[in-house]
Image 1 (cartoon, one colour):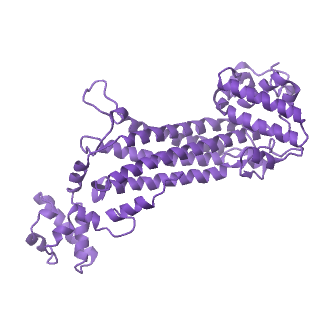
Image 2 (cartoon, helix red, strand yellow):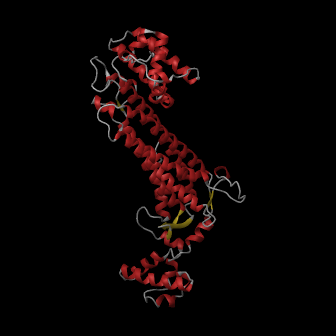
Image 3 (cartoon, one colour):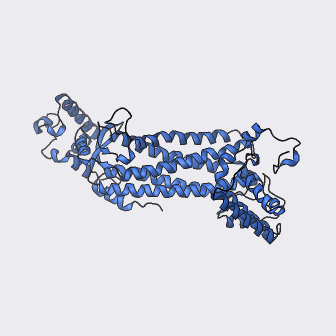
Length: 457
């Protein structure tokens, strides 16, 4: 018979294949620090309530801290037979200190133990990711400040639409990543609830002090329903959703960087340190870091779908299916953190080809909307102005000219409202400067957006 901590009920040991299939120690061992932290707090609470003696609690804490040190030094080998990190640590503790180690599990279950571990882990990961987002935002703001005068095409449908500045374009992403930071802050609030003390699903007969546990483990709240506390993972799903949305923003940005770095655009050049070459074509310089982030976005989406699918049909309360919650959470956290780190480094070293950007902004009739707005100031209804400029653009396409290359007489052939001042109004930089609405691409508006933007701490 095996030495499992739950062996009393069983007359026969599990098969070796079942043991291996059942075990999660291969991946949940990374929760060792959270598990030990939770166990030390639980032991102190039991002593405070007179369920353990002070001497037993001290013995438990000292032994657990020693085990923590040895794990970090690589001196402890975990056992598949003990299934998971919780039973592995408890088994090692009991081997070392005897009966006191066996008493530690009083008034708790592995169900609330794993729930508190993953919440502790996610609280740390959320803060780590928020720090990476803040660093990225600092990098983007710095790049935006340096490119307030860099004119580029703004696009819709990936077609040239209206001229903007690169600073303005970067500030759009700053707003997105700022909201991502806020989403993680909201997720933190719903993760910051203590499940420990819930038992398996129905609470415990012992007079425990969950408020003490919350204070010891730095939780702001206590899960009010034990069944909910151990059986739901909506906080983890919310975390994965936040990761997915942030990866989507990174992926969209990477898609633009990939396009911009192509020979056809040549708006930017990636630093050699964040590019790769071809095994056969010696001229190639590939934006592989951006492509990898774009690809890894699908992987994080998969992590979210994995946990949604795991949870969708589970009756209350805990089910073994939920052991599979950790792999997608670990993978998404690691993937997002790695992606944010490499993306920030890549953006800090990017070379902007401002002259090429501005040249592109001067073609493609990007001043057409401003020409229509000019006619509006002459008292013509906008829809009529739209049609007039549309006919002018068609004429220019057929003639191989830009709007500003037409003579005043030619323009007046489409509308007598045109006057000599049309040319200064449809200059590309004038088009940008003319924007008056709040949040626009005008230099004044961009300066205000930069001044107002606060990188979250």
